[in-house]
Image (cartoon, rainbow, N blue to C red):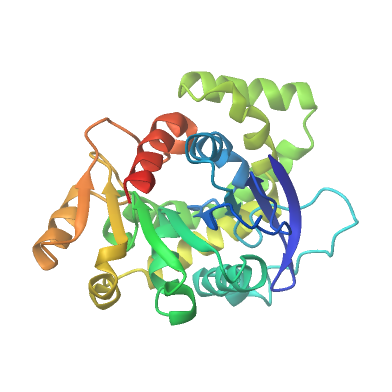
Length: 305
């Protein structure tokens, strides 16, 4: 596993790879396949490590993930400082994140690579937007959209909770995160360990959660989330139909961000689309507890294609 902050659209952006690093070229006789993951929100790359490791070990392909702009910040001063959210709202909003991913692919993914795209949650919406550009879609072998938030996000149960309650206390959550950063490390670890134990989250995520609770990160995360509520409304059937032979969608059985009624609507509108509902009780935030299981499932899909 390798990780670093790379410049994408002038923003230091966290990138993690298993297998080939982004600056390594392919050997003459090896497959030119790259699995590229687009995370959900929050776009914290370390949550996806076990999932990526599973994919890499089973496929042998390089597996990369690019974080969302502003969701992770380098802790030292050798990197360019991130632009502030104020005055750069579009940069950190959903459209800015789409441009950010397009720029990453154009700058870092070899032109002769066969790209397998995996989008989780809002990452699925970003992938559909990327497919509008022939320079991207022509290089993509297949797109795997996991727990996809691609329509009416504000009408989903969690979307309603966000827009009717959470949006009014974002300032309080950011303030509490600021207080959290001043607590001794042992107390921070204790509080997060209580949380992970209560919700049965594996302890391997302890450090990632602590790093995630940072005021500037949270401002960017909530800004993007609220923008999603305004932007993600009508499903883009045209792009799905155009690329349906390259798209697979996987919905959760009890997903409060992409409920089953969205799956049924999709199948009604596009009956021959490759879409299914999870039968194994995987959660929307599968990376917290089901990374290996979902990694095994997706790697089977990729190998079968």
